[in-house]
Image 1 (cartoon, rainbow, N blue to C red):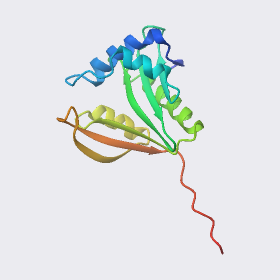
Image 2: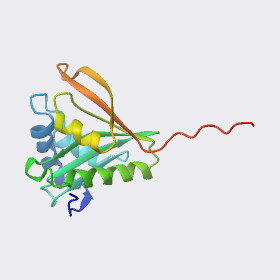
Image 3: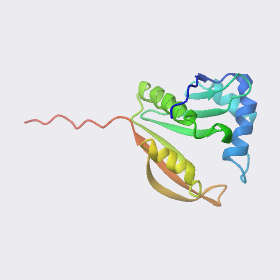
Length: 161
């Protein structure tokens, strides 16, 4: 099911809601690192996109993507539980992937808790491959899984033949 949802870039008034979603849905049981000020900095950063679904000041889904020379890193991604399994996450992820592809990224990297089977399945269903397990990745005690999706195939150099 593909949701009929509009994705937009976050604005400063969204920062607190995003930070609280991160705390409750992603960082639960860990040190809360993505507080309002850090999210606000990400919204303003020229090498990041913070995309959201939902009204200003109260988004129900968000993704934070950081751009590097040849890859993008999906730093945080969450959908409120009552909006999950409605296609919202798929629409948001597709939007972020399209921007990354347009920006020239060859691949996207993302991490998830090893125990978060729902997130791992979601990413697998969208073409992400599990590359490695990182022991004690989160707060030096929770294992993580590194995932990656290639957006562009590397071109082989032309042969001299």
